[in-house]
Image 1: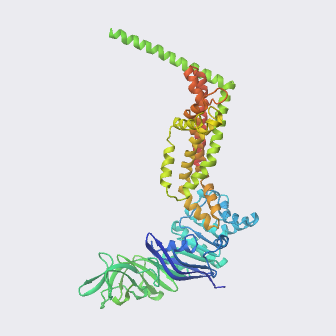
Image 2 (image 1 turned 45 degrees about the vertical axis):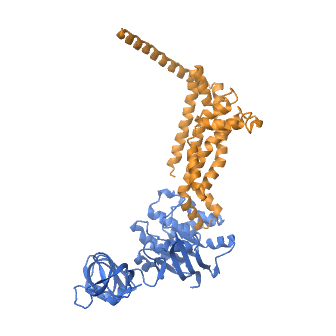
Length: 339
Length: 250
């Protein structure tokens, strides 16, 4: 597989209402890979994807497409580049016409011949599992169908990079699996680069080769799970980070005031009973989610806030954990990193 | 005595009511006769009205739709003020529009030289100025609701700015059509401007509405009712068509 850098950004900055919403020193996307941009709401995911898909312009920084900087280039050249990428918005928007005409739109403006249009529309509808939907009116589609038509419409123009903003945020749970399968398929079969945003980390794990984690407009090295904002307080001669009224984590830090903290999922030890240890960080919680990734089991546990922990398949089976099980979580004060 | 007066009064009332009913009945009878016999005078007036309002609405659409579109998509300094002004223009009494245009095209006005007053052109000009603000305002609000979504979608699919603008217009087609129809509904039914600018000249500038007001004041109720029925039928079909278009989902 040809793995060359297709899209690259440098020193990118975006300011909204005097607030720096994006600040990214550098980021590169290779041909044929799937990237997930993850982060909580307001972390800058949509702004980043709008800039990458050339819908929005940064206040500072450079964007390179296939090694060529996109700046001061002719309208025609810009159009040529824009026609190699496409973005599927978070809320699917379909023109008020048939499914066929919706998908044909991108092809018509590229002056693709009618026979080719017909062929491609048939193909892409097959990919998204909606063969025979050509003559349906767009307002007669369900949310999941509309989302798939929007993806089909994007695929029909055979983009080099397909951007998807929260592809499954607005659709019924039943269709999430179908849309995820389509994303994989596009990448495998057509070797397209896919860049999508999501706030669902497990989705990022399932689909992406690389996960880009955003927090407050900056790229962070940690995957954005077990990240909390809290206030440093002193109590009982110890230092704590207070997350909510009930939850506080013991930590070691010279910082003061409000900080972000991160606990690596692998640093959290799980046990069926509380075991005596020197650490203050021992909590009881309920298992809310279980997923498997790379032979490790990821568990989301609700202790008042959600913490994620990873265990091996063996210990998972030995501990006999199910959704709703009550377990104990323990981690050292030194495992609580602040940034 | 008081009782006698009351009786007399109510008897008089009865007589009058009888007259009124028979007179409505006669009017209706005459109206249907005129309509079904395809009375030439009635139909000349109807066709003239349709022609004048048709031309006016065509011209108003040509300028109103693009202007409404531009106000919808462009951001400029006086945008809010312009929109308020436009919305106000929707409620301007037709006689005021008539008065303003009258002052321009009358013999002593700046455009008096062209001798437009009391010609069909004058009626068209009046109706044009009545319909245009409606079309601009309604096109603007139609475009404003869909602009960003449609434009972004078109751009992400590789359109140029012009192609994206066209996609917005196409997407707003039903709303734009109902803007035009609403404008037509207003001008075909207005009487003030047509009367002041056209002068209600028989065979030349007599529209349905000016004819109705004249014939009624002459006591020719049948003729007035005949035109009234046709006018009602026209506005009814406009409204049926309008609600059909609106049911196509905006």
